[in-house]
Length: 322
Length: 308
Image (cartoon, rainbow over all chains, first blue to last red; front, side, top):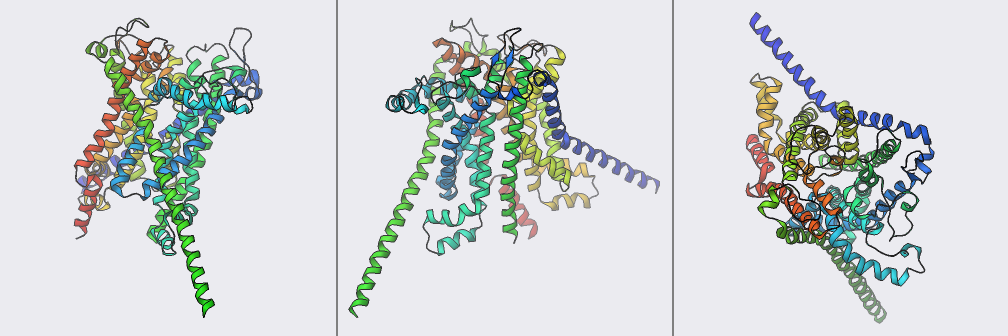
């Protein structure tokens, strides 16, 4: 009798330990998120003390001793511009891909889908290398220069001599990089549309395109927006390829002025200058401050995206069970 | 009589026009959608072709094993970078995999409460954090505290990218294991952790291995967090407290140099990196294609048999 009790007690204890271990590992992510936020805030404190909120609106970038002055505005604008252009190019393409693959017979759809997914496996730095030595050359000679010659004098968008290391090149590479994410999530979401909806549309005599318009798009609108925002999150945080292609201007010169002008994003200025910045001056706090802004933007974007996407996929589960 | 016939004729032609137009639009959309896929695949093809074409001319035994020569000389190789990438992948797996697996166990086995839903959500959001932020974080809490660049800082930063991926895939594959397996274990009087490790995890092994390998291929190409943690070096690994090289870092540094020979070496390093990463990705794919129904198919079959 005693022996059984002891055994039982031991078992309960070992299971408790196991449960606690699993819970600790599970909450690790929460601890890390809090620690990151705390570290970034406390380490960037000197710059907020020095510049106040004008850090966000200033355009200076001067790391010379005794004349230090830092403003994050150009890089915030650079990130927003490149991400916006990447979305304009990448999202329609991704939704087209998702339409094709969700609808194609598996023998064609599966390999093509896999190839699109492979785009996500290519490391960022290789996109940068390819963009720098291959894509940039063709893009400059065949696309940017003709456009500049035709409209450069009249439209500010196309002014500035195309050199290849500019906002547009970086944005196009970003667009390619977000395609696998956006198209994979969109595909899942389109698959989540109940079969009955599609059949009902076909029964009304719809063609395939009309079926998409009638059944799939209205049903999956929220989810598709979520998928696009997920792509936006990727684009905002992307570092290496952009660093290698955007031209790396600093200060007032980094404010996006034309598609063919150099700029700088929040992540690329950190990548470029972090190692050289001295922790003693306010140069490093300034870079960490930019990191903090980037983190806030990324968190907001991703929280919205995940809320939209998971809501959509939950509807799916409900629809199947009913 | 006549007028009805006329009207019929008219309706018929209107109908034909309508259908013809709709079919035309449909066909146009099909073509557009297909060309979207082609537009997306062209860059992939171009990247692979260029990396292989340029990389193969750079690669030799010396290139793979030697330390880098002086800048622009075109001599030397990427030995330290290959070694560094393998070391950093190993170390971050040692940190990241256990945490990820346990976190996945938590989400799957104890995942029916508010805390777990919260964790799951933050796990998903954390997965999308800009990797350079994780680099800054590792820099602040390790490099700045120690006062020198450290291999551990790099491994820690990469493990932060790794563990949410492992946690998510572990959760997914543990959830695929039928509840009856766990019930059988309970009926035998086994402890919960024995059930989890000996029954559930061993049944879900291949799914978990896939997740771990995918996360390895993801961190293998990460550059941004390494810049401020291991910095890069042209020497072979000597201690945990000195800068170390890694393939992505080496590619980046080579691409910044204004020499053709450096560019060629960059392509060579890119070829090695892409072989490692695509090798893992295609290997997983091949493995699952060879197993007739794949892992999930087998489980479904087992489950069907169990019900019978």
